[in-house]
Length: 557
Image 1 (cartoon, rainbow, N blue to C red):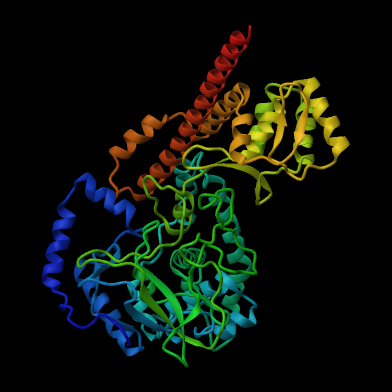
Image 2 (image 1 turned 180 degrees about the vertical axis):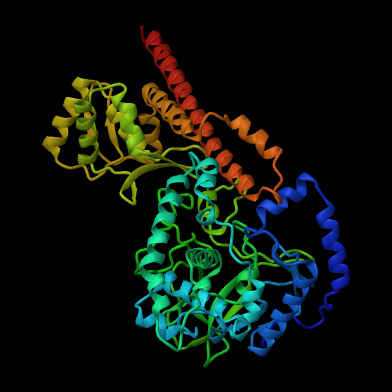
């Protein structure tokens, strides 16, 4: 298997591992709860006892060996009936290859027994892969992937599978609320239009309706959303045995996946990427690129830790798992799904993380318009918005919604500051700017739109930092605080303090949906609170600068 770390590693002591697991289960400290939150895949209710969990894991290991999947003896797989984790049985070093997975062992449309059915129906992307998963599940023990499928939970507890009541009560006000409700409607239409007709397929398929209902489709979609990988151009996306057992930890990637050529032991220049909810589909499916982002303005394909493109070059025959960080004996080995905020984590994987640095909150342009209409006439507001657009500015756009991002530290997108600045210009100043723009032409989004003390405008370039200072007038800062209050009202009558108290009284093992939803609510409301602080500091800076200016004038006199 090449340079693996199997040698000189102790064989796993399963008795000791079981005792350690019992000890962990008996702990109820805050440290344990924090670890559970920050380092795990979304867990589903247990569908096996501890004994059967051990048996299915042993069966899966035997199956992997029979299929030519090589994995290091340095990896210890633990299964508590709710989730599987991977730990190091000895020190792992950067560059160690811990697994090699032939592409033929991956469950894809191309490898599934339902390939002909799927391709003849013209189903691609997540739709096609969902049919492949449902079909192989319908075969039971006759499926070539039976031990692998038996190891998987029936479904992942994604909001997509929650009841409408749960979505409305738990996600109200969050970046996910509207998105999930829209997704549920689209998913049902997908099933009705594309999956239901397959039940009339002729022999040899003769599909069992019990395995192709809308609930089974939702279950398959949840597994694909949280576990599938982009493999290459031929296989597209698929379920990769073993690779999906590594739990996520934001910004803490220990192991990485690469594609390996059959003609060389060296890895290719391309990499495998973790899929999002919509993995290169050409069908009518809910998009994972909604009005929230993964943080920091990144796209929803996962950030910089995992490449977001498909693996090119179908000459490659296997996937390798390579250590990219040293891991000490006994520690868990983590994968990462990218630099992902909590809204995206809950949407795709069913869990959230406290203090996630990639969280954001969005303020829709519609909300800014409501604020403007509370102060000015509709005609006045439309004219100011038109001027902002003529200057070359726009917000983020997704699913026909325009919005502005507030980063995890509470800093608003500069386009929002510019819009508020223009909205609050005095009437005569607005006309001067309008005339200046008409004379000089389009400024192409120049950030250096500066109002001098003499009322003259310069459509010149300036640094964003300088522009922010100039834009943070007292009125703009007050507008930011009002917008934060308006956005915060979406969460309902409970205050942030109420949410924090509810989280403290919530049990993660019994109330997972509530627990993770509260983490999301608290994270988002914390950002809004930091936006208020940002605005307040801007007001203070404005007052300080004004006092300084007065002192300078007094000295001159």
